[in-house]
Structure formats: structure tokens, C-alpha cells
Image (cartoon, rainbow over the protein chains, first blue to last red):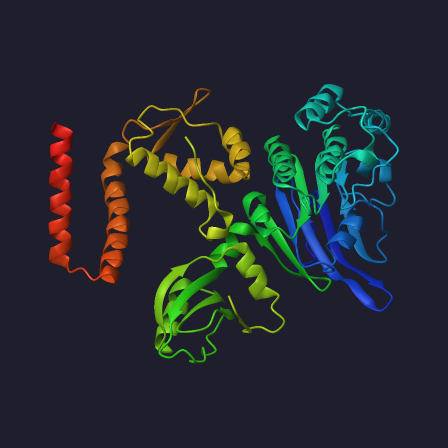
Amino acid sequence: MTDFIAPDAVINVRKLSRKYWRKEALNTVSITVTPGVVYGLVGENGAGKTTLLKHIIGRLRARSGRVRVFGLDPIKNPVAVLSRLGYLSEDRDIPGWMRVGEAMRYTRAFYAGWDESYAVSLRERFELDERAKIKTLSRGEKAKCGLLLALSYRPALLVLDEPSSGLDPSARRDILEAIVRTVADEGRTVLFSSHLLDEVERVADVVALMHQGKVVFEESLESIKARHVRLLVSCAEVDTVIPNLPGLLQVIGGGRERTLVCEGELESLQTSAISCGLKVLDISRPSLEEVFLARIAPTNKKERAS
Amino acid sequence: MRLYIDPKEGKPIYRQIIDQIKYLIAAGRLQPGDELPTIRGLAEELLINPNTVARAYREMEQAGILATRHGAGTFVSKTASPMAYEERRRILKERVRLLLSESYHLGFELDEIQNLVREIYEEEHIQTRE
């Protein structure tokens, strides 16, 4: 991670650290989000994703390190930043006593860019009743309502914290569709955190993996895939111990056939597997989920039953 | 045109799109001159990043499979068929491989399989001529 400041970055976080009691929630985190990309933030619960997002939207002040959104400090320039930023929090905090229509009028008052006809079209598409009280809505409806409020002023940056968590497939579809639509409109940027890796793999251009308060990697999805290899190998015996191949991250499965998730060049990995007496049955690219699991396995090269 | 994307497969999504569109052309379900969905339309339908669709389309244009007419849309290229033979052969090869592994497990030898293929082919042939 360099200290390089991209001049046109929508979000620029440099060496951000934060401690809660003795626990290090963020440890010298740096991320760069460039315009027009869908940026996926992945990691286990407690990896620091929400804490990082809270710094970006100006709910937490950077104690150590630097946070810039549209080139501005979100704590010093809350109006300039928040007027161009749509945010959906993990707990969709809209007052429960409000009705959908009231929440829309309330939010509209804060945003000069509010587009009423767009808001109404979203409400219709999401099938939300404007007279319904927020507290009577289902989880999925609450998420859709939060999304409607975050999208209706057409923000240049959409920040979503675990948008699909705990939702049914139809609400998840609406969320993903909103991400796709947002980025299809030129110049708009999306930052979202998720532990649903197949969703991240669908929509993200760039992925940052967080683990224990640190960014393990920040990279385009394409280069993550190009950098990792999945080898299906056959061993001589059921209890053959897989040798320590260079770049081996994880061995999945037992018995004679094992899947190796590795990092490195496809050809050289294949050659070194063969030279160790393994028969290579298939070579492919791992899914993001496999890379993720291999990367955050408690100890590298750990065997995992499939 | 209906495509199915499986993010868990490991194969990059743009590759999945290319393979499936090639398959549809090879199978004749997409004909030369047929119009493809817009990048945005396909991205919304499949719930994938529009940049991914754009990349798949771009690669297929470069390979001469698709042609974009400015302002009019993206179409299956008129010259897409010479490509299709290799593609058809590749698809068939995959199927034959599956057939052979199944046959092996069922205990059939090559000559038996060949006889069976011929037998079924003739049966089908007679049926279609009737």
C-alpha cells in the first residue's frame, strides 16, 4: 500500500487507525476509490468494514490518519460531502414512527438535488406504500426504503453497508439492481461492504479484503482472479501430505483428490505440482469466495475439509 | 436470449458471457444480424457490472463475432459463421468426453459405443425422413 494520493479519487483513506479499548478496529488502513467504479469491501464480521465506512461518511473522526471524500474532510465539510453521498447503513436507521411518504418529504428537505419523480418511480418499483409506517415494514421493505432515500438525490457516491444482509432474494435483487443502475449512470461510484462474495463477484470492479482491521489486498477483481489458481490434483495415497509448494495458500478436501488454492503463475504452479509427484487433473481460476477463505485461513496452508 | 451467470464457477463473468453467446450462435439460436441487448440492459438483467458486459462485447467485436453499428446497437456479425465450426466442434468434443467417461463407468468398449452411435443415428434418420 503506497502513500500515493490519486488526484481524482472519490475516496482517499490514508493510514487510518482506530482503537476501541485495546482492540485495534482499524490498523493503518489505506484505500483509494476512483470515479465510476464499484468497490467491494469484504471481510468477516468484526474485520473493520463498518468502522471504515463510518469514517468515510463522517460519523467518526479520524484520530490517526487521513480521510478525504471528493477531496474534502467529511468532518470539516459535512454538507459538501453528504449532499453528494448516499448512505445505507446496516441497520437502516429511519425513525420507526415515520410513514414512508413522511420519510421521503423529510429527506427531500435536506437535499437540493432531490429528484421527486425519480423518488416516486423508485417507490413504485419497490412497491412501498407511502402511508405505511416504517416500523411495520419487513426487513426487505425497510432496506428498499433506505435505498430509495439514498438514491433519490442522485448522489455521485453511493455507500452501502452490508446492503443484502438478511434479505430475501427479491429484496437482494432490488439492491443489486440499484448498484448496477447507479454505476451505469456515468461517473457515479459505489462503495459497498458485503460478506456475500458471489454478489461482490457479480458487481465489483475493485475488491478490498479486510482482516482484523487491516487491508490484506486492494485490487481489481480481474487481477485477483488472474493471480490465483485452483489446481485439482490426485495424490498417490489417501494420506499423502501435500508438499509445501511455493504459493500454496490452502488445501481443500481429503482423500486422493484435493483442491489446492494457490497464488502465482499458472504454468510454474503446474510444473512444481507435477515435480512433487502430484497428478494435475484440472486447472481453473478460484472464485472470490475461495480466494477469500484461503487468504484468511487461521494459518496459511491449513487443511480444510470440503 | 437468456444467459446464466454463476459467480461461484470461478470462470470470469465476461468469459461466461462470451462462451454462452458463442454457444447460442453456434446452436443457431442467435442468427447473423440479430440484435443483442444493450450493455446496460444486459447488466441489469443479469445483475452484473456494466463494465463486465462492455468487456465481453468488446472482445467479441474484436474477434468479429459481434458488430456494433453506432447509434443502432450491437448485432451478431454476418461473418460469424466461419468461427462457428470450430466452436461447434469444441462443444461437441466436450459432450463426447462426457459420453466416453459415462460409457467407461458403465463398462462399454469403444466399438460398442461406435455401434450404438451408428444405430441411434440411423433410427433418428429414418424417423426424420418419414
